[in-house]
Image (cartoon, rainbow, N blue to C red; front, side, top):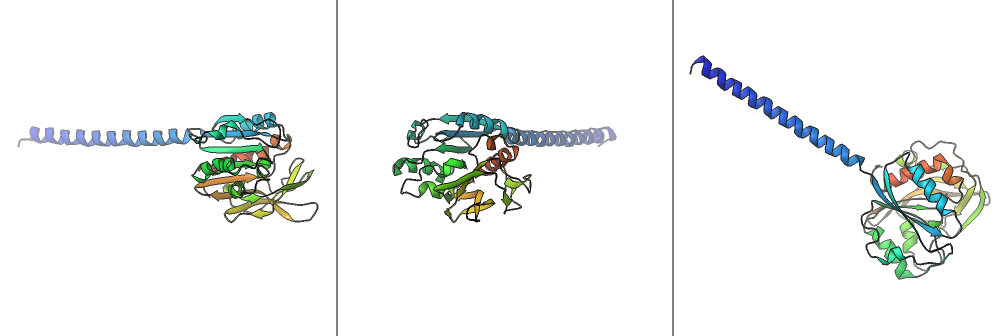
Length: 265
């Protein structure tokens, strides 16, 4: 083969090599871009609210605005059942009520609803893998019912609370990602301390506050594993002042991210 022919072959080989590298680079860039886009997709959250004793319209607005400072979340808000303590809301009549959501936030308060089949229609979706955040009076919701399904889902059993005060919060799971950025000396706005009768076996306390009555430490933030679902809970959230507190809102936001799988232990 003469020199010219050899040069042509070498040029073709070089072109092929460069083309292969270029295509590989395009593929890698495309994959990275796709992964970045996937990470930027909003968390799809369902906020269920309503019932007794709280300013749910304000709380919903404050929660959505506060969480937006920490996470990209696309919300649907359901406020049904009126302002009493006993209701069965229409949402749960659909067996697929939680389908399509990455996390459900329960901030409702229906203490005297006792229908066990109705309660299990809610907990079933979570047991099958729908993550959850549970706030304040969600812990007293269905407390009059004999079934423990809801309480096992929450991770705690509570049937009463103490007086409103400003409670210091002590972190007990210091390295948990939900607590990242929480001040060591956080004191709540005026709020209620819930008396925790029982922590269920798969629940883990993240932070506690001390009772001003009996001196005991009660969990005020925790994680739970319920079936296939992660659950984050906090008993604080009674007052509008709490829902205006940036520390509380960041705690809930990071709890939401953890529950939905965006933060790892």
